[in-house]
Length: 236
Image (cartoon, rainbow, N blue to C red; front, side, top):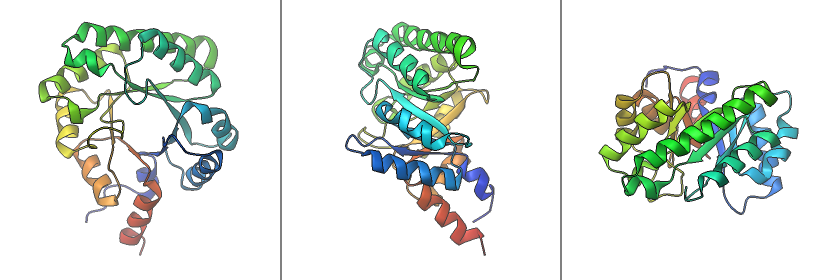
């Protein structure tokens, strides 16, 4: 296997994730401690734990990512705006937002564009006025339930609306990310926008293949294992 990233660079592609609905405060504490130690890009957690994570991760290079409209995406735009603003107010640096999948399946792309633009514009205004930091906005499209044509249309909308990333999956769908999903997204979006692959990423081999396909961020609960496998291969 060819070494294309340093261990530090690999760690900075990983959002170490714990979105289990029965995760405890102790679980979140351990997640954050491990993230600090390894210097992951971010921890991805449910909103109820943002305040706790902020205390543990203060003065570190690990970002806090939280979710909006998760995992179904069926909330109203107004509800998603409130969630997004509240997450940032509590300390989130990044937002993973699920689009209205029913609107996509209904062919209502105008709704999707309006939804994303409204959230992006609200957060961009607030990040300038109140928070003095850029908030990364990642939009989850749930590739497993979309057709190739739907993926293409939605990805073009996401970039046009000003989001920072397309994210493939919630991790709660019928299946996780596939290499072809990432390749297809990369065909549509420019290099100005990131691609976050998520769902079923458990090994360094998985991670490397997705990065080679064009992913710039990985959402996984197996970040520690991925780094360990990297070390076993290259740290000799």
